[in-house]
Length: 218
Image (cartoon, rainbow, N blue to C red):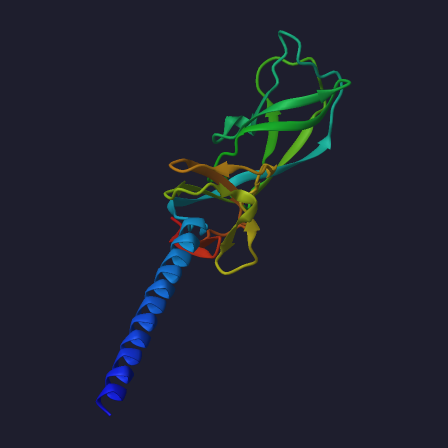
């Protein structure tokens, strides 16, 4: 009877040792798997909206009512355009083809122009061309700066901006058009866009890789 009891104890002890070894091996495998998952996990995007500012009464677009004739960019002919009577800070350069004005390259959108007024754009300085007629279209622009505070590159194609809860716009599509960019760690992206109305924006939110930050707009 005693020998049977001793045998049972030996078997039981052996089973416990085997079970302990199996558990230790399993825990080691689990720990190794977790370590591998953490090592291969994509880092989270970390960013800051440094500031956001309304620029009301800006020249957001223009209408060429008459392209004129005889315009030139040769020496002695000014291509700089301002609002009539040099009012405000708007400035642009003429884009000329065949003596006619086909567009403008905007240097400064200006601000604080009155929505109830009509503004014409005129060439400053000497110019051989005549009969050019361009009117300014006014609206609100929002300027902001976004800093990448993390270790992961941020692709603007995958970043979205919401204005006062409205439909989002992509951070690759500024007021100047579609221009995809990468915000590298430590870099700050300067971005601006037309809010879509002649009213100031109160709040914006940006979503990148599931991370959302919001900011008031001054």
